[in-house]
Length: 220
Ligand SMILES: Cc1cc2nc3c(=O)[nH]c(=O)nc-3n(C[C@H](O)[C@H](O)[C@H](O)COP(=O)(O)O)c2cc1C
Image 1 (cartoon, rainbow, N blue to C red):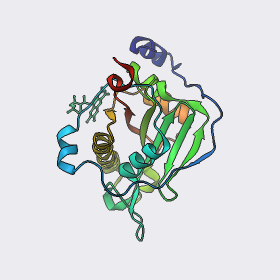
Image 2 (cartoon, helix red, strand yellow):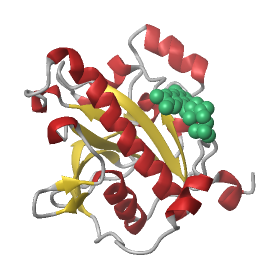
Image 3 (cartoon, protein in one colour):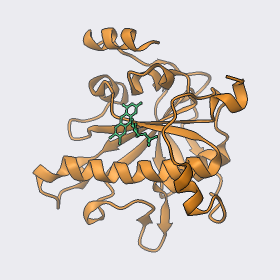
């Protein structure tokens, strides 16, 4: 769906998900991530960039596993520490995945995906047209209910910073894995919150599209 159509539907409150492709599995166990190797940090930093052309090729589970662990996995199991920081360790950001087969929440404790809606939510994750067909749109949602020790007036900005740190992890892991990505704020937040069944204290912060580069697999 093109941007103009999304804007028009958004104005009417009609931007909605598509039916899921196939049967949505309620829980997907991810294989263990590869915790060694990858591109050296300086090389990944040299390659970090936003891209907006994606092949529709699905991301295999081992790739999703590495990506999500880098994004916001548990890197210090004893204390439950994560790969990205959060103010007072509130860990308020949920990483949601809009896949063709359904919308899932990344569960770091079990390194698995939990189904939250059996729909193809990708086109609702942003006004730009490429989000509809890319294999994965991540959605970063803050849960202010976990931010009880943080003053109310600071919650929105702290959650934005926390989501930004996760997003940069994704950028760097994409560089390492040969994937492309773009972080996005241009979202119909109301449509997305409705489609995900979010509560008022669970604002959508950002989205981020991930996939293989179009030229590599589709000859564009
Ligand atoms: C908070 C934030 C919001 C952004 N929103 C969008 C967006 O809605 N759509 C988009 O295509 N790019 C978006 N971007 C990506 C920027 O356009 C991109 O980072 C910038 O042009 C610099 O390019 P680079 O990332 O390749 O260095 C966003 C980036 C940030 C940090």
